[in-house]
Length: 376
Image (tube, rainbow, N blue to C red; front, side, top):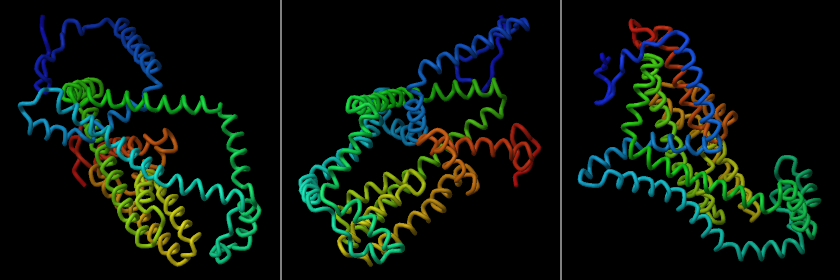
C-alpha cells in the first residue's frame, strides 16, 4: 500500500493514496455527507459558538506568552501551565467584577440615602444646566421629570413594567445563569486549546493546505496575526484610557474616580463607548457646581478617545496585519453591528484575510495566488 507524505506534515500524518482513489459518485456523496454532518454539528453547538469563539480568540492571543512559560518550566506537568494560564484568565474576569462590587457596596448606603431624600423632594435643577446650549429646554425637561417629588417611584413603576414584559425576575436570573455557564464553557475550552494547541494548529494547517492549497494556510496565518493585533489593541487602549481618565477624574474632583476610570477602560472596547463614562463623570462634576471642571473633563476625554480610537488602536491592529486605517474601522464597526461584541476581533481578522488575498491576486505582494508578484 502506497502512502503520500509531505515534509511539512507532523510525524504520524499520512495519506493512503490507494484509499484516496474515489469513484466520482462516491466522492460527491462523501463530500455532501461530510457537509451535512458539519452543519448538524454546528447547529447542535450553536448556543455555545460565542463562547467557543472567545476561547479561540483568547487562546490565539495568549499562545506566544503561554509557550514562553511552558519553555521556562520544562519539568512541569503537561497540563499545569495551561491550568495556571486559564486560572489567570478567569481572575482577569473576576477581579474587575469584585472591585466594582466592592466599590458599589461601599457607596450603596450613601446612594440609597440620597435616593430616598430625592424621591421625597425631587432632584434640584443643576445651576450649570441653564448655561448649556438649549438650556431653557433642558431646565424645563428636568423640572417636569426629575424635580418633582416621587420621581423614583415613577421610574420604578416604569422599570417594573419593562421587567414584566421581559419575563420578570426569573427571566433575568436565567440570563445570568446562562452567561455564567457560557463563561465556564469558554474557560474549559481555553484550557484544552492551550494544552493541545500545537496539535490543533498542525491539524488545521494541514487541513487548510489540503483543502484550499498553500493560500489557505497563508490566510490562516494572517488571521491569527490579525486576532493578536486586535486583542493587543483593545487591551492596551483600554488600560491607557482607564488610567489617563482615572487621573483626570481624580484631579477634577469627580466622585469615585477609580470606579469611573475602571468603567471607562471597560467601555473602551467599543468604539466611542468610553464617552458614556466620560459624560457621566462630567455630569457629576457639573451637578456639584464645577462647570469649568466638567468642561475640562469632557474635553480631555474627547481628545483621549479620539486619539485612541482613530490613531492608537488602528496602528496597533494594522501594524501586525498591514491593514489600512479605513479597513480597521470598517472591520471593528461592521463586526460589532453584524455579530455583536465578538465582531471587535473577527471583523479586522476577516478584513485582513480578504485584503491579503486581494494583494496577492493583484500582484502587489508575492504569495500562493501570485508567486511572481513583487512586494510593493
